[in-house]
Length: 426
Image 1 (cartoon, rainbow, N blue to C red):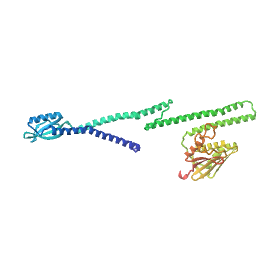
Image 2: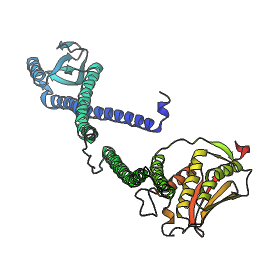
Image 3: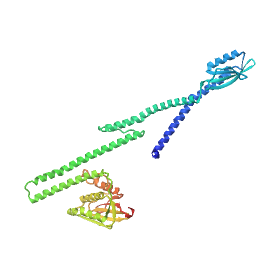
């Protein structure tokens, strides 16, 4: 319970609830006073003034006239009237109850004898009756509030909630929800649900487009592979066999690129936690050379790595950072000329290790260079799905608390920084 009240919103709502309860009680007390108590007091005061000033004469000719008048007033005003002589002897006793309220005492004469007339309010008035009357009144007030609240919540809360529930159920059958004009929090919830549905619909549309595009892109090279492999079953010369074999290999690599793009799409939506491990720059360079040098040299692409910090270390998710290198290097390899060059420079700059991957390709139009890291952006109009590779690079670098940017420098250069591993702060 104590932990609950540590929450600021819970405390605020609790205080507001107490305030509302206190306010309802004060309003009911004031209302009860003006409806119940004050009219009774006014009635008593008016009865007193009327009887004393208008109905009881200063003197009577006989005691019988006095008694007759007293009986008539008691019946007319629903009061109890007693007569006492000047020696305090009760002459006429109408037996007032213990809880009857005395409202006045006045004098009159019969001949030369003085009489005292005491008046009592005939209805019983005591604290118990007052409290029971107040409780009954508050019960009525609370019942009215409950009914009013039920009607109010039914119109402003229950009905909108039922609408949201129905929209959720109907969406399973393809019926989209409708946006509301914002008048309260439930309208905001409804509109957020509409935004979610719009987002899901856009995602579904994009997924269908990607699947259709991949299916279309794979069919063409796959058809060629089937055709060339069928031809290879015939009696072919060594030259023809080598030519067809190269074509099959080329088309297979094309399919590999298409599937890699789809893999990029899946990775972009896979928010995995990073698995960090400390890596020495020298070891990273050796792995990069093993992964790319021979393959790139076979494609007549020169691959060089230079550094001034072989002994420095970085704390990285190796698979994700190797994916960064893979995406950038593969992108460069597509656009370099026949005798291409891809250079990687690794430098220590303050508390960061700076990686620059530059090629001697045509570069990128300065107008669009800032969009290279946007999802699905591509500079190649022939590609129907692309642009996720560099987007993933940006995401992975930023997960490591680094930065990445692209610029032209006799070709395209991409530079990213990763924090250096400091053993003293581990």
